[in-house]
Image (cartoon, rainbow, N blue to C red; front, side):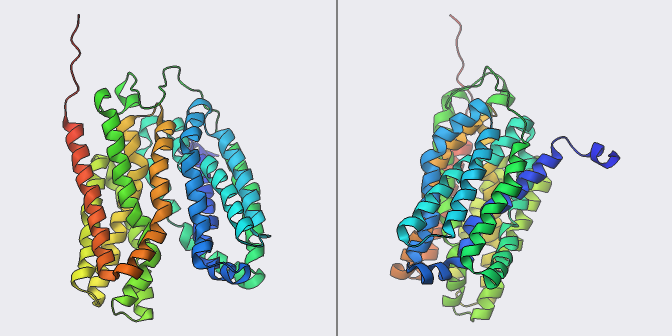
Length: 409
């Protein structure tokens, strides 16, 4: 008990939410990359059909995002996350009995509903609702730990697949939602909504609650944030899925490509750790600006020096670190700019363009590599990140503008 008494308030709940995020992402997005070929073989689906499941659940989340966000602002996250865990568990279990394309994609649609209610950015909203505007470091720590999802679930999924087959795995993952995730979500405290909480993007009184954006600049800032993270998200969600092939096509052997690509995870974790450790010393938009600058430079490094192990290693380390910083900023920048009140509604609106961009990115990069070639694809990725960098510069200029003075009558 003395040890527990020294823990920060809500520390156990935050640890629990980290576990639910690892299970949530590990049992969906990461598990499919291990099981994809087996599902493709047994259900007679092509790779586009198999990974169309990810597209389906991301598009579903985008469609539901605004409505879910408004609901979270009104009632808090507890009920939504509990319902979401049950729906995710049902969808994952039904994947174990899917027989063709229709039933397979229907399961992912169901998982997408559960994802919108319990995963996505709902954990971030929970932290903000219980910790307020001091939540940045906690969110960064959650993002840091969530980066372990692939490291845990790739070998776990492979081991279960070898022992029991791919169908049984989905039953196991569905049971995790009910036996592990649901009780943790049920422990979330009830949310007491402030009567001054705004709807939409309207400002409220109080700097800490309303954020740093002046009232007349909030709409422009919102769309700049949406542009920044949608465009950078196309690259961060699309390029890594083709990373090994890109390195192999650059002239590296399969063993070299796999070994260098494996550095992506540690680089992302170290970047998130650095942001967590020293991030409070810098505005979050400055950290994001640095990541958006390093990203395109990393892509161009492989363009100018293809086939070099040194250049390939530098590309993977720099690109992955940049994406790690940007992924944290994606969760913390809206809070810094728009404040705590109406935070879930703001994230719900942001989820629409972001999830649509994330859903399209794997297929987009596959098409670009096939039709335009690797060098052109890397150059296009650098150009997209430059667009995001310029949008961030525009956002910084917007934040530097003084609020309009209101003259008294």
